[in-house]
Image 1 (tube, rainbow, N blue to C red):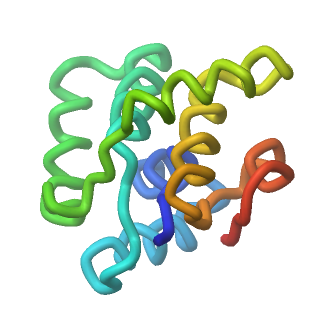
Image 2 (image 1 turned 135 degrees about the vertical axis):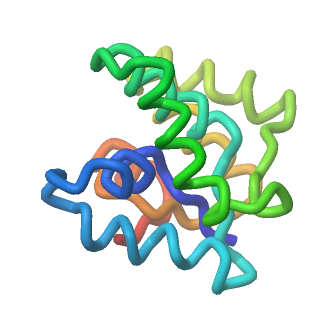
Length: 128
């Protein structure tokens, strides 16, 4: 299984992002490849990023509607309770909160993370 990290969601939504083109390709993989999923918390992190960057509710809704057809509900990977408490160890080692969540889910499911994040790539299999 492959897990799309938040960097691809943000890159997809922001046409000015230096990784926009590749992010569009990565998001397209969600519906075209059976083993590519988006973790539920990556959606929450992307929304938090938009909110903290000052996106209005209307802008956030437009963004989510743009992704809605690209990420069907069956392609959302849900966290287990154990993957959340496993993330605590990673956080104690200094890993960012959301990075620790995708990393722990990847470890639990033996998945590769689709990301540019170096902290994640040092802990689990990663590709971009």
